[in-house]
Length: 227
Length: 227
DNA sequence: GTATCATTACGCTATGGTAACGTCACGGAA
DNA sequence: TTCCGTGACGTTACCATAGCGTAATGATAC
Figure 1 (tube, rainbow over the protein chains, first blue to last red):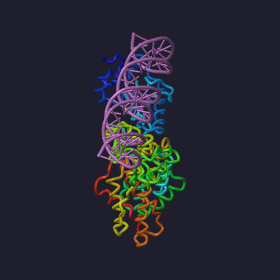
Figure 2: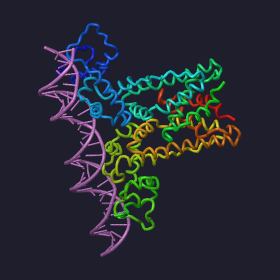
Figure 3: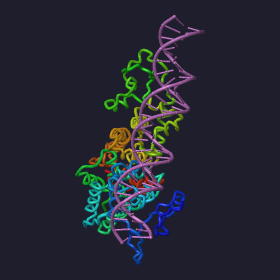
Figure 4: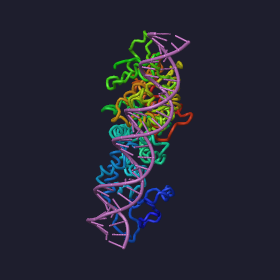
């Protein structure tokens, strides 16, 4: 039973036998660590290495299908097909679907573009516009539903996609305080939530907001932020 | 075959009724249409009538499982099992899963409790508290994901659960304007979105908010609303 | 020699949706 | 009251499909 895979990675059971997989729950990320730079100074590599173009094809396809179909409707087979890759190529890298999706989230991680227009209002407007064009409500929706079944996914999502952006916005407000544009006792995090939340709720109520929406929101809420 | 009425129909908004009429054009509806317009004058009923306890058991189970598992994971079989009902009893009422879920939404419809504390701040606080304890982010999430596949569901959700509440809150703000508590040029709908949206985003970022959260949000945003 | 690659197939389980069976509730007619 | 037709009831079985995860194969890259 012991998987015959002669995988050189001792600590990273990738897809072991059924029973081994149970214990493997503790060791996420099969071979993914390699992505963080091939430590292993010695050029160790028995056998053919993983193809990195396959890596990114899988991640790209998974991201695309996750957005389109949601978590539970996204199938490994469809990911493989979209990526023009065999299913085993996926299972070679990720133990199961949830691990793949976690990797996708990690891959797409935030990348909050550094926004600093010089004024708090300008920063907030830029963030709203960014959210309006990029924020993926559907992704948030499909992941939050998995809360009970896959809490790791929600944690990953929060820590990598939600919180960094909220903190970035809060930071813009804090800079505004230093410049005297924003009232000192404002709870920046709550303010950031109100802004981003407006977007979320707008999407829920009426669908994606149109151009000019960001300005209206900011005009409405700014009096609560201004010094 | 249009209607051999099978149901005595004592004002049962259950499956059919005006609410289900939304789907009437897409959906032939086996014998449900009759419920809201067919002649009940004559003691309409050939055969055994639908059991209303089964009606509500199905809706209750479906609601519960929809919240727990999300739309795509919720199965008809599990609904039947939870409701202690046979699958055919469900298919006798709804053509398919999406129609069942639409009926569930219709059934749970808003029921925005009339909130009127006498002050705009009091009303807003009450609404926030209500959302904090009752708003089902998971439901919103799972439905928004179905946007492309089942647009009717999203429409139903918006028109029955989201918009009525938003309008109720906006109404509270408008009453505040009349009393001079709220600034006249406030966009009430946007303000309502910011409040409810704060809740949504809070849930996404940190999970369900704790006690005291509503007050903090309101304290933060109120200056933007006040006259 | 080893481990990846794509392809194909397989076993298993879950699901949607339908059909058949015998039973039970109801209204209307005898 | 008795009987009958209608249609809902639960149960069980069934079909077709789809998904997950594994295995076998032959080729190919290190």
